[in-house]
Every structure is written in C-alpha cells, then in structure tokens.
Length: 135
Ligand code: FES
Image (cartoon, rainbow, N blue to C red):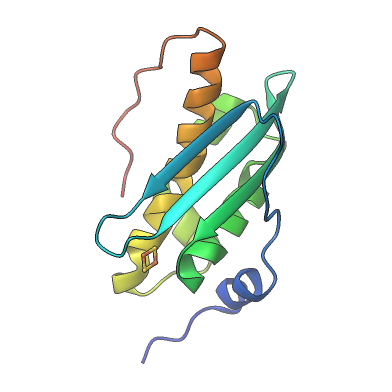
C-alpha cells in the first residue's frame, strides 16, 4: 500500500495560506470533472512578484496538500517564475504522490496559473503563449 510522504501529511494536517484575499489582484479556479474537486487561488502582486497567495480547496487530502505547497513554492517569486512551476515539480516537492492521486497535483499549478492569467487580463495584458505544461 502506498504511504503518503511526511510532507504530504504535514501540509494536509497543517495547510499553509488557507483562505481568501479580499480585493485579490487575480483569482483562478480549476476543477476536476471526474472527482468534482475544486481549487481556487487568490493572489496579490507587488512589483511583479507574488506578495501573497491564499487558497480555498474543496477536495481530497492530496489536493489540500498540493494547494498548500504551491503557495509556499510561489510566494515571493516573479509572475514569470511562478508560471514556470509545473505540476510535476509540485508532486516532486511533496515527495511524490500515488499514481491515482497525480490528478490532484495537476490542479495546483493550474489554479495558480489561472490566477496569474486573470491578473494579467485585468491589467490589459494579452495572455502569454504558454508551452504545454508537463502533466
Ligand atoms: Fe480529486 Fe484529489 S481526488 S483532486
């Protein structure tokens, strides 16, 4: 039987940056149509960097751990650096996830990227051409 890593358990039991940012600069929601889980990210941007990130995840334990670690990976980064975070990097940062839970880690970077794209849209910036992210 697969054992979740200590890091997954830690971020599931004590998720960082849970909540909502009022008057967020950008907001992005993604969902998985199969399990029905939903993840929303809120961002605050200062001088081109992610000054704050909060999330609300209606989902499984792995999805909560993923959301939490993504906020830690991205806070303080430039928007471009945050856009370069891939789902694979998120799963690796958590010390791996079981195969049937990898779809949960796919939501994390996607929700963050959706919030950044929302910010750019609000700034009147055209969406950047993204390379297909590794799943
Ligand atoms: Fe759907 Fe984890 S079971 S996100």
